[in-house]
Image (tube, rainbow, N blue to C red; front, side, top):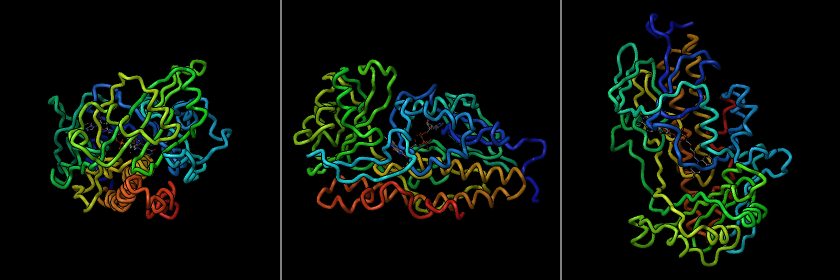
Length: 404
Ligand SMILES: Cc1cc2nc3c(=O)[nH]c(=O)nc-3n(C[C@H](O)[C@H](O)[C@H](O)COP(=O)(O)OP(=O)(O)OC[C@H]3O[C@@H](n4cnc5c(N)ncnc54)[C@H](O)[C@@H]3O)c2cc1C
């Protein structure tokens, strides 16, 4: 047994910047704090397909949260075993016919807002704490926040998303800033009339329903929430759309987004055509961008005291449904490393070096997901898309957890 690296008068304390997942004192007996720059839970919402990472949820979630996972689903009553569908649907957007149905047994959809709310219950989350700087001391770290306060701990993990401040601190602005891709991107939550909602649900895949259009455009149509089963007019759906930036309005991301989308809807089949046609004319579509960041070199983790997880460590597009799954894997691996350090089985530096190497290697998914996105922009070669060739299954070191 190696000596615990901590000053014996201080308890091992983990500062988690951002992600409200993973380390729970009740679960692992490790002291932690989650800090988030938001002043409360965010209002942006979307769904995440948990495919291969669902087995890891058994290990990182306390049994109660694991048992109540259905309460995070868009349709909380959907019994994923009874529904008899374990595949995503990729259609030809012009005909509506299936091009591919990649399988992923055990997959389920999680509404990100419900998930953060449910998993955050009982966690020590401090909102309104925007990290602006980090100080590394011999015996620990200090996180400094924009409100002038600070938090002292043993280690910091930056789970602060695509534009991570911790990443910029580790690597500098030039290397740490994500790339904005030259694509128009819209995420449009909406409700419909009861009749329209029933029809759209009846013709859509309950997990993932995506269209690749011969004119090189991507659309997805998904259920986001079903607050009242008996009243379909309350059901919330969302549409995702992306295409390579074309005209000046796309370049400027001008706010007439609904008009710009409708201009591109000729030749689309259902569910996409009706889903856009039936959007209320006053639908507001917020500004959005597609960003990626792939780790190209390992960061200096300052003796294991500062590292990254989730989108902060690898920001990828959603076209192969990997970002959330990979974040769950990071949480699993980081918790494992911290437990080993706490138990004196590994030194902090070594444990975090091993974690970082794994995260770095798994960061190659950023490029694969980018290729999956670009395939929607090249319909003639769509069969070469990673989504058609390998579906949603993990690749490379991502797939090797059992042997690690
Ligand atoms: C439309 C869409 C669809 C997707 N579909 C899928 C899918 O089907 N399957 C899949 O696996 N993944 C999917 N993803 C990706 C998935 O949602 C992300 O990979 C995942 O949410 C990343 O979680 P995270 O905790 O790393 O980052 P985030 O969820 O971005 O959380 C980062 C947190 O850090 C906080 N923060 C940021 N900066 C600071 C700071 N300076 N100080 C303090 N706090 C800060 C933010 O407020 C935020 O709460 C999708 C993403 C989108 C946008």
